[in-house]
Image (cartoon, rainbow, N blue to C red; front, side, top):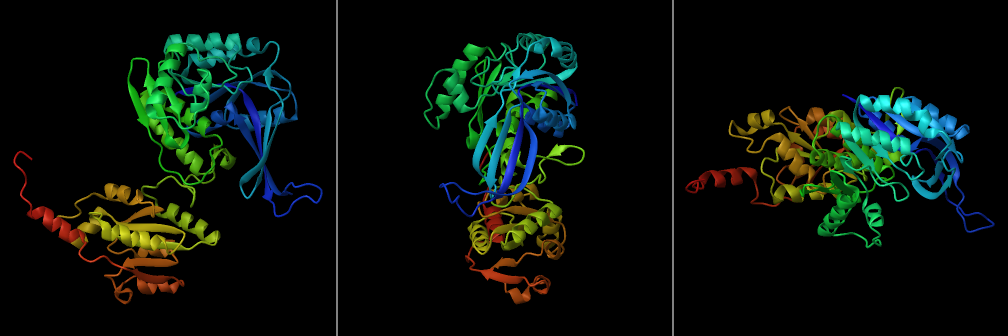
Length: 481
């Protein structure tokens, strides 16, 4: 994979975590009992380490002050990226979130991080060299002045002229993107600010595309990808094409850093030759998963790279899943139990999903805090149902199940029955439809061996995959079909 260059304003992010259960005696302010503190690169620095975590070699061009936070930031960045730093004035920007139970109580900001005298001359040679071999360039502007430096602007313009893909993540206090940039990625508020529109709340898609058209005419980019938070992103191209990339559903999570995750993934994909539309679509999915895993607050150094400790959605804060590996599902179950929750599992072939299935699964989920569905693989279904089954292959069956709001994860197993998977997951409840008698199930003794229980929930008679398949087989195929 070719390298990626990031140009932008670095800052130090600090999270001070604790719990709060009382107020100050002398003021109506919460007392935070501190339990831990974490630091990580912020701003364009976060985008740089997220890029590096994704695989490419990263050169990060920024301004760093000669102070203690600046030294700490150099050390954190240098673990994963090549840092090209010019002087900064006004002190390192430090953003500190004070959090209780994972929720912010207060954020304090200090420092200015402005490029100092001679910044452009200091970074010019290394920047030009890095851009000459780069597969893509990300300009991550946080309004402190790095992207506004004329030397930087001229280097970016030369990269555009050479055909290097350029992602420009703008800021209201920063300069306009260099004309010809491949794609600019303002959020809705930034896009409105750029055309002096007041914030009107959630915009309709036609309004977003009109906004994008105005910015394309003003900035001269190849495309505009306006990010819309939980609604995904809308893309408008200079040649007139339009596309929308809706985001997967997320409950909870932390949106801090989502824009950096989006821009970083976009730059990575453009460096590999992806089209803008495909890259935006994948970046929306990636940023959504980033939010679900805890956002910037979950980014940690893991011995050899920066990553989020849990690369999967957490219970109660998850993008809709598709297929989970057995180990991943076990970790999800362990987290739910550790939080005092009840793990529920159900299973079957689910060949043609019908209301009997959906009602059984909804009833199962209502009994606990997490529902894992164990799904027979295609080979397993053939052995149980015959050579004409399944009608629907396992990946599609898993995706349909995962789309149900009540389902937290789907695990595909190859055996004739789910006992091996159950022995790994050890759910508190194993739920089947009322057409099954728990006493007759092979898995009942196993589930009860660890203190679990087997439960039957009301069954809707007259609904079955076998009947649906038989009915479909008996229908005459229309002429020409």
